[in-house]
Image 1 (cartoon, rainbow, N blue to C red):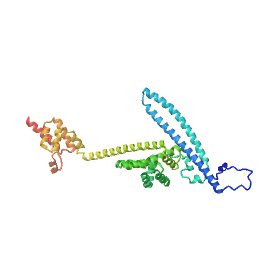
Image 2 (cartoon, helix red, strand yellow; image 1 turned 180 degrees about the vertical axis):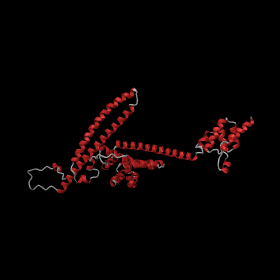
Image 3 (cartoon, rainbow, N blue to C red; image 1 turned 120 degrees about the vertical axis):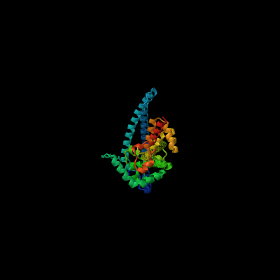
Image 4 (cartoon, rainbow, N blue to C red; image 1 turned 60 degrees about the vertical axis):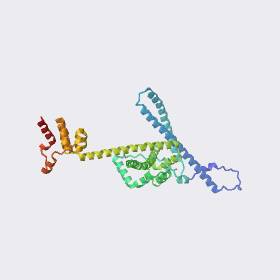
Length: 377
């Protein structure tokens, strides 16, 4: 489409004669080109100012709602006063949000009416796709569908996702996503989150922090796409434009989210390690269980110190002496637990020779001690 608006800047007098020098063609094209560039820059600046102000408004609204929710749990007079103050602030912020939404709709309409030309087609980061609304999917994805989609995506692009996760410079990340726009999606973000937890479990802390940075980059792009209601592939350049121009609030928000994410990763990794340790301990415990289904470690810890010393020294005579001095009921209780846990094997040699245990041999030490006690009486 030809851009005729530049002619508004050229004044032609009707009384000019034929001797008037011709307009230099090269200069005219430069003039038209410059006029287009200036309008494009103004439109881009207007868009960036809108995104910053709208983003700030939504962030403040979210913070206000969170504070209000927390204070509603308290019942102090100070809390009630603060709640009233926050409710008034929340009302104003909601009003501001509606105004920004209206302005955003107006801005999109204005951008849609902007003519295409050689500059808009070739200029990186200025694309008509930024105003295209992502169509709502009529089909609701089930968890099974999401899992299958994630698995298929990772199998196909895992190497590329890992490469992106290892990048550290903004320019390198932007270029890599420009070359591989299919990576700008939820599946990449999900994979990076899981990879971060794996790295923390493996105690590769420095690498985890690097991948965590790229995870938040991807999440910020996805959030920006949601707020603008566009395909993430159409707005990742806007994220890098914001972050590279050192927008203080945006960088602070990014760093806050990065710090919080790393803490969550460490918490999840610790929980996974603890779960694995419990599972391992339970497996080992199951392996240790004696013929009666008791854990020898637990039984040993429950024994009186005198009996522990007997097992430590493997002194049968000392064990018999200790049992003879104990209450018969208590002695039988502890010895039966020792048998059920495998700490004590009654008549082990006889069992080996005969290949079976008789009922009478189940508690030999206790029976022997009982006979000795009867003789003493």
